[in-house]
Length: 235
Image (cartoon, rainbow, N blue to C red; front, side, top):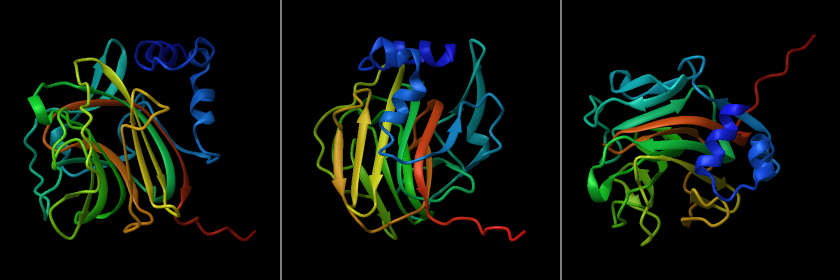
């Protein structure tokens, strides 16, 4: 609990003192009534993650705390269409609607396209959504994207920059499959940085990563609705 209090007090300025003292409750209040289906702080390894290139990812220790991050920009993974090269997906988790929180720290300043990405409704390497949190927006940076059997295309026309520095930041991604809405939040958990509506993919896997930059990730918490339930055992 102490770890969460320090992290939220440092990075999530909108939380009250009471919420910082009980951060799980603050997350619960923003879960849109969905149950907690995944939680990760990397203190027990990375066995629950599948990456597109294991050699590009490292489990780091920072001041006694473990984080999962990219160790280089250039990945051995080459996607079938122009899209991110560095992807880590949660194993055995397919969701329709969800609210995902995570902390991220950019570890290399690459200028206007300094970024991190979150992936969702991931079907296969050629079909998925992702949000590109690029420092300076343009048609290929700082947008909510779709990859649908072709090079990525922006679903948004965002003009608001992402204020990257060398500190930790909070990201929230919210998906409502029935409405088709996608909302992305950066530090400010009440007002979305960008929003899109698209119903191309109604379910899929979720994950973290970068187009071709370097980030560390920690404290991932996902509330959601499972796309399919396991069979019920008959006694």
